[in-house]
Length: 398
Image 1 (tube, rainbow, N blue to C red):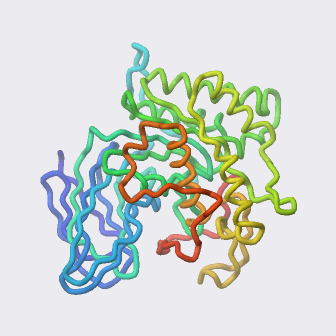
Image 2 (cartoon, rainbow, N blue to C red):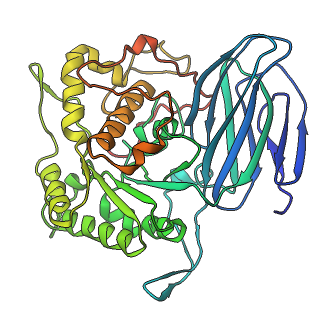
């Protein structure tokens, strides 16, 4: 492996090795801190040694756009602990690849202007060390060609949201798996199944996936807003879902559908479905094509109704001026999740896998505990140290 260049985005004391190369970084007391290293597209095994000989530490480890890997590692003075996980790194470049005996030419993902320069699509693998007192002894990064990869397709409820206070279930999802699984989240805010395909995002997935890998699809929020001939739940939407099925299976992959998450739209104490026929249309394609389906539309309805009209605001971007130093106005978004909401919905996705008896459940980390949306977690107990990046603008789509 060629020598890679470590870019210091913030500060900390550590040694970082990539292949046979080792890099030393000067120490300071500022945190959170970020480290980036140039690597080609692919999956990488990251091994971190956390802790300090001089002080007690508390560290949260995330990667790329706030993708969660270790939530809260608390160690006493003198203690260290080693963790390994798989980070998928990608760029917009799509190399040529073979499918069905034919070569598909090289191309690029047509990312949106807001994605340009983000950690999700640059040439580097970026790690974030956050928390009350983060400390990293060492980091080793090495290519991993054996990990099973889960690719995520979807919109703003799935994407790795790069800035506070927004979050989606896709960026919490990697936390629940052991170091034999990588998660590659190609979702983006505002996309429909059709625009996802038109931007070559599925082509990017097909160029990277191995036989036996998985592709999850959650669409509907934005598809329902399309206007014109052929739009609606029962034509373009179902035709596009069938394209996902055929393309993924054509490469030897496994596909799983997720119905769209509910919006927080209460009528009395009951959530009203705002997605029209789109959940039913996805279920119809899943039944016809024998596609496993996770009914997030149903499970998020239970979650919202259990938490109630007021309590359910804790799942979403509902904040008042003063909740964050940078806030200039109140937020009341009933579609987009905050980190706690993303955490809860990610658990619903895992429970959906368990209900399907999916082979993926064998890769759940030992700490996993089954989740019931009728007994949600207490938001006051949720731990999420804020990153240094924030945005007061809503993500595309609603």
